[in-house]
View 1 (tube, rainbow, N blue to C red):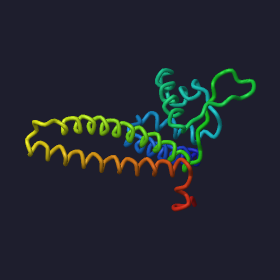
View 2 (cartoon, rainbow, N blue to C red):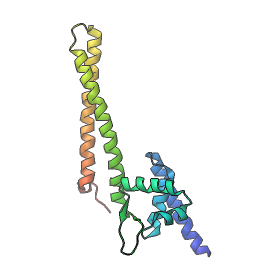
View 3 (cartoon, rainbow, N blue to C red):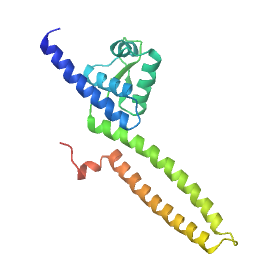
Length: 177
C-alpha cells in the first residue's frame, strides 16, 4: 500500500475512533461507534457479511451493533435490485445524526424521570393527606412536592427542546452552516 493511501486510512481511523469514544460517552459501545465510522467512510451500502469482514466482529455482535444504529436512526436498511441480502446505509447528514441520536436518548431519559416523579408525587400527596403526620414530616413532604413539581417543569422544557430539534425549529435560532 502506498504512503498516500496509508495517510488517507489513518485520517479516517482517527475520526472513526473519535466517533467511537464520543458515542461511548452517551452509553453506546465503542464497537458501534467504530461500525458507524467505518460505514460513514465506506460511501456505499454494506451487508452484514461485508461489515463483519471489515471490522472482524462476530456476526451476532455485528447484527446487534447494526440494530443499535438502526434504532438510533444513524443507519437505515435499504433495498437494492438484484441483492438478496439486507443492505445498510449510513446517515451522512451529521446534523440529522445528532438530532436522531440525542433526541432518542433524551426522550428515553425524560420519560423515565417523569414516570418516577409522577409516581412519587402521587405517593407523597397520599401521604400528605394523612391526619396523623407530624408538622415536621408534613413540611418535608411539602418541600419534596414543590421540588418534584419544579422538576416536572424542567422536563416539560426539555421535552419542548427535543421537539424543536425534531421539527427543525432549532435551526431558526442556531442555523446550519
